[in-house]
Length: 460
Image: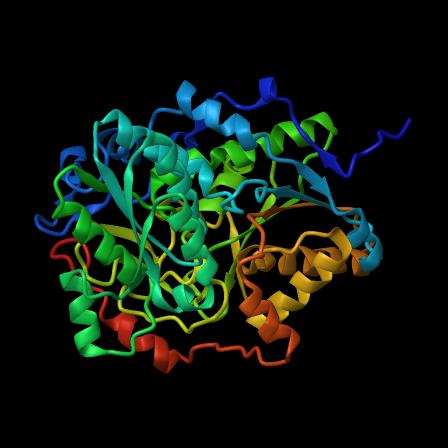
């Protein structure tokens, strides 16, 4: 008898994972350590304490602890919006006339509209436990800033958010939501920091970047008593917290006697991708299974597909530790496309290492093709996807079409990281035929890549 597959499968609260999974504990080779730019040596936990909460700094550098217990206060908040559903895209499958089975893990059922709340709650909890007054952060599309505003409101923490200026303009209501939860939001680059003032002096019309916003947020944290900086992507600690996405997906698929042949996630800094693929990458590394894992990035900011694997600063102002990652150079200024959460010059060190060691693939897609997929998906599956998520949808559709052509009945899983209801400027541009694609030339990429710093004895 064929098992009936529901459109949406929700695990119960009791089935929700009680631990985060640390993929580093199962990696055959670790990524290279962070470098303290002041010493030129690997960063120690105490080097990170002026910037990060102490417990988060410890998580950042822990390569051996396989599972971390999720604190009860964090679990209590998770239960307000988790477990998130595993969905079967029946209508999309039918429209594509594909033998493939398409599943997606939907993370948009909370006020932030995205997966970002999973790490925001955890980081705010550890800041509160440390007795801090507040935290600072950056945000691109505004999803992370919104999520952190919610989390800080819950724990009674002050929050300063530096929002990439182009997104600040494109998504004004993101600012309104952050302010509703008590966050203080500033367009970056701003005149509130040395980093911001320097960038504006060189380019008064600078539209901003995540690297620039990080510089401002870090500077404010290290110069303000009782504050620390928190980040919504890239860092090991963030991928750890986001592992709950993949753990839930793995468990839900097991209920259905399913396992993905292909796992697809959009890639900016790596938070949702790293979280979604965590248990499936574990299976691949340990030889239990062999799923294809595909990262999808914008052609306008192609860190994986056209970047270099080197140590680089995580911010434009060059005040953060240096990480070994795929990077376009910390001075790279991406075009003002509408996937604000993917406009970052680098990529998670964990994911960079896995990509470098060929455990995963990466593709870059143009903005108009992404929105073609977003609109098709919205019409068929009733969810208006965030532009970031639509990168994964584009790839999932392409893979399903390949299955139609070959007759293969593959099982596809992708991450639907959030909703696009604050991205109506983007959808309007697409619907009115005003959306354009920008693919940087090698000449445009070269200056920032050539400016990647040297480290004596490590990177010449």
